[in-house]
Image 1 (tube, one colour):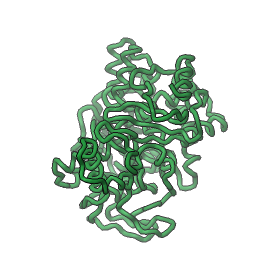
Image 2 (cartoon, helix red, strand yellow):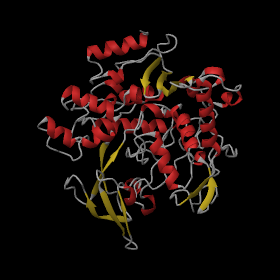
Image 3 (cartoon, rainbow, N blue to C red):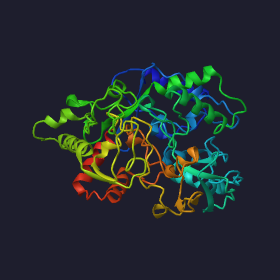
Image 4 (tube, one colour):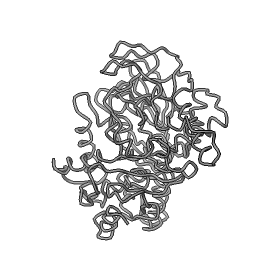
Amino acid sequence: MSNRFLALAIALSAGLVVAVVGALDRPAAADGSDPALIAFHDETGQVRTLDVNGPIDPTNPFFQELGSNGRSCFSCHRPAQGWTITPESVQQRFDQTAGLDPIFRNNDGSNCEGADISTRGKRRKAFSLLLDRGLIRVGLDMPPQPEFVIDSVDDPYDCGAPLTGVSVYRRPLPATNLPFLSAVMWDGRESSPTTTILQDLAKQADDATTGHAQASSHLTPQEAHDIVAFETGLFTAQAHDERAGSLRAEGAKGGPLALSMQPFFTGINDPVGLNPTGAAFDSSAFTIFDAWDHLPRPHRDEDHARQAIVRGQRLFNTLPITITGVAGLNNETFPSGVTVPGSFTGTCTTCHDTPNAGDHSVKAPLNIGLTDASRRTPDMPLYTLRRLSTGETVTTTDPGRAMSTGKWADIGKFKGPILRGLAARAPYFHNGSARSLEEVLDFYDTRFNLGLTAQEKSDLVAFLRAL
């Protein structure tokens, strides 16, 4: 056992990390004995996290109960699940504690605030979205001077919420790879034009402590600093694939070490002229597996698997996509002076442009239709919003960024997340609506009429799960 694994084990046994950690949280062996590296098995191989600050410190405020309900940041950000949570891990914690683990608190973990959780059966019902999709309830009040009102809500849980706000259900974003962020939270509500990402992360940590953990006082400046320093030192990526083997073999640059050295600045490789260096957009944003593009003719199973990953990377970079109907992109004029037409041919990297990370390198929330009424499932609420200036209405399962800005044009807009470490953290999208990478591709295939072949889907999945 490495020194880092030992530190984690000591912390757990001593109760410094207050959580029930099951089989999915047990570290796997990693190459070498670097105490700054931890590894965990996932469904397709092994995911690893590198802490560039050195061995993990279990006394960091990230792991401490700073509120009143037993929670810490660690409650919803687990390294074995890519520093978020998965339904499988949550179900395991429910079974081990009869639904009494600190993650099961009805200020935000239950479908309705103040739900009846007096028995195990009632707790299972009350926390069904957390158990089934890994979703946390976010209560949002209407912003000042909004351009719309909430006319009605079709609520499958009959929470009885007033029409002055919404309850939306979202996946906790990973607390890793944060140096690549351009906006904090799915809807960017913790970011502003006048603050830095580090300031935004400190505010987010404080809001999470007073909100999710129900603390009666704010974080101290030192506690906020320590949490942000810990989070921004973490880099997570898939390091081993059960079919392709080591993702660093033969010159490939998989795993967290290469990722930690990846350059980033706001606007890097931006496709609409927002790169401050003036450099042109390069659709080949992913180059992790370029070295495998020149391997000899395959003769081993792992060679075939590596070539599938290369084909998937090439598709991600170059597959032509007719991009239309995307609010926040089509028909927008950006500060650079670039006006994007209502329909144009792009690629996956048009929106996932940050090199080898895959999020958008500027604050650019988009509406790709994930919250449209046509995609609603029975376990999601449906809000009818009415525009005050025109009387037009729209129905949505989550108003998205509009609940922060009050703008009609921002309804349904969300940021694209960082893509590294995907295999460890299903389900996907802000609402967990895609339970697998295959379902992610099915969404894009139908949304943009891609006409993907079975081989193309297989290759893209091979690439995405190797990130």
